[in-house]
Structure formats: structure tokens, C-alpha cells
Image (cartoon, rainbow, N blue to C red; front, side, top):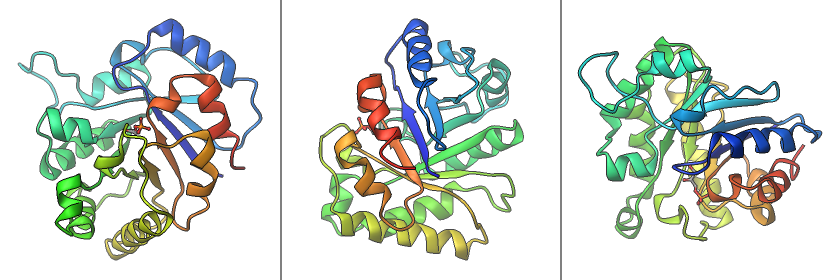
Length: 234
Ligand code: 13P
């Protein structure tokens, strides 16, 4: 059983989500399906698909115009939230420290955080991939975490680029993350791979040891691209 999560980013409408839920309702799968959608769609209901947000505020409440708290997201019906996505790190200045604070907010409000880590192209070319991944994991997870969390390894240079790391690069990154989590006393934490996942590469990626599922961007927006990913593994 794998976790197949979609990240709709700033795309779609409530009708699009309702249609997607309808189309996914007939597929036969034991995999966990999560759709992380814009805030405006968080109260769309589904028995089969869990709904998640894409980010939350690091604050509980107050004068933070435009921000949405973990409590509000949970109140709207979400069960998950992505935190520290590459685009939030790039455009909103999220750091491992803010990601950890947001993860604390998520856990305090009963949300499962999907914490993203991954290296940029500059970091990759400077030979820093392993350091960035390990520090991302160690610094972004709240200390003494007991509640479930999910980690997503998203090589930032590969997102939306149609590029994927090699099989060995994914295997090495996921082994490092698994070992780091064990060292931190976290067992049973699923680790997803994300960046340019599609129907044609999903099964191979999810056959790599320590890859517990995928976080899918563009290919999660249309059912004819998303369903083959969900059904590519048991
Ligand atoms: P793509 O699948 O479009 O590369 O996006 C990946 C991603 O950012 C998922 O969070």
C-alpha cells in the first residue's frame, strides 16, 4: 500500500475537484489518496480521498492578513497539509525553522504535515544534495514528535521540469532520509518522492526501497493522468 498525494498548487475550481472525486470514486485501490488543494476547496467532501492544504501560517491567529491558520484548515475539513514546499521556500522565504514551526501548528491542530525537503540545482551542482536533505529532515521536524508526519523528498530542480533524478539518486536520497528518521527515533514515517511523477514512471519510482508513495503536481490535475499513477501500484 502506497500514499499517492496530489498537489494542485494554484489551479482548479471546486467543480474540478468534485469531478475529480467522482472519477476517482470508481477506481479499485488500497492506496491512500490525498489531494492538497487551494484553501477555497478544503470543504469539498469525499469518503475515499483525504483533502489537504498546501501551506499554513506559522502563527495561531491575529493580524496576519492573507494567512490561514492550521486551526482554520482543520476546521474546513482538511486532514493534511503540505509544509515547506519548494515554491513556499522560494517565493515566501520559508526556511527549515519556519517549516518546523508550521509543523508544530499542524500537529497541534490534528493535521498530518507533509514536510517537503530537497535540493536546488545550485546546491546539487555544489555537491550539497545530501547535506541539504539531511539538514532539511533534522531541522524541519519538531522535536519529540509523536503524531504521524509524512516526509516528501522533492528535488527542487526537477519540479515541473519534466526531469527526474536517476533511480540511484532517488534510492540514495531515500536511504539517507530513512536512516536520519531512524536516528531521530521516528519509525514508520512514510517518505514520498515528488517531482515530475507521471503514469509512465510512477511504478518504477515506487519500487525503489524506502519510497512509500509519491507527491504529484501537474499530473494530479487531470483524472486521465492521475488515475494511472494511483493504479500503477497495489
Ligand atoms: P510536478 O509533478 O508538476 O513536477 O510537481 C511536483 C510537486 O511540486 C509536487 O508537490
